[in-house]
Amino acid sequence: MITLDHWQLPDGVEEVLPAQAESVEYFRRALLDLYRGWGYRLVIPPLMEFTESLLVGLGEDLDLLTFKLTDQISGRTLGIRADITPQVARIDAHSLAEEGVTRLCYAGSTLHTRPKSLLASRSPIQLGAELYGDDSLGADVEIVRLMLATLETAGLSQVTLDLGHVGIYEAVLASANLSGEQEKTVFDALQRKSVPDLELALVGVAPDIASLVITLVDLHGGETVLDDARKLFAQTLPTALAALDALQEVATDIRRQLPNLDIYFDLAELRGYHYHTGLVFAAYVPGCGQALANGGRYNDVGAIFGRARPATGFVTDLKALIALLPEARVTSRAISMPDDDDPALEAQVRELRAAGEIVINCLSGAWDPRCDRHLIEVDGQWQVQILNTNDIA
Image (cartoon, rainbow, N blue to C red; front, side, top):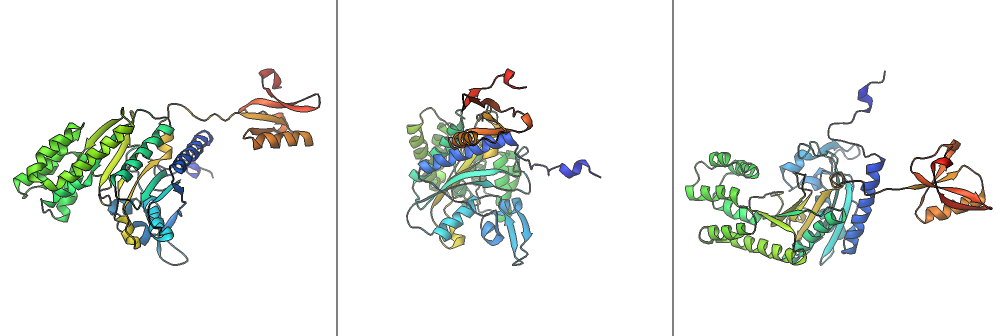
């Protein structure tokens, strides 16, 4: 007996039907071409790897997101990738092992054991770019600009760029001498910007240091936030000033290219803190509460593959990107051809398809609704003509 369960999909896992799939593929090609124009080379990592290389050194969050299974050949544990970034870091460090700057890009499916947020997919199509071998702020700026160009190519113009730097949090926490468990609690409370939870987590910490940690909650907004932070840290935490200077320089360089861009600073932003080592950034658009694209600097990830290199990059979910477009951007119209065994017709069809046209065989006289033109024989020549309702019997 067939029941509804036979065609149900797991929660958070969706199929991509023709109209959406066409848009996904259109933008996948357009964006990979964009990255190619910036010098980024395409790589295609495997869907699964041994967990030793997929997860080591990347924090508990990614471990919890990763589906695991046993390899029937080796008996070792495999992981289905939840994030392609570590795989690309392995490719740079081990498979390519190039000197100098290496630019790589990718697009592929990932799988999560649970959604990252309430409405997120558990099967995102992750697309991104990574730059290795350069530790300068210029490399960070390039990656941020490429992320913004990605959204522009997708037709999303109202973008807010969110900038932060994990060096500020690290400088503040270093002065607090917290235990590992306390730091986890503080980290979680900061992400939620919950002052009561922070106060509880910081019981026993020197009042002036605890106050400094709690102050991070309010250090977000426009460029005046950087000035406020400089005044706060100048006497109490001078080691944080370099991170503030880096944020200022990145914002200035980006505004030079994009003077109308809305830039928001959040000094308590710790996205990917467990493996990011410097600048972190995200892009938001109206009507979407979650970051549409995000990234940052992660200089230490390659060390687990035997070759630590400076690295910075960003990712986006192609399915989430397409879902935010105001209307379908891809309209593939087609030409109908009669089901006729005529060599001249076949030759004309081959020529049209080679030129990029969609030509659909009209089997049993059934017209495909995508067809707005048809092939018709006129004086012994096959010609493409506009299809009207009178042509459909």
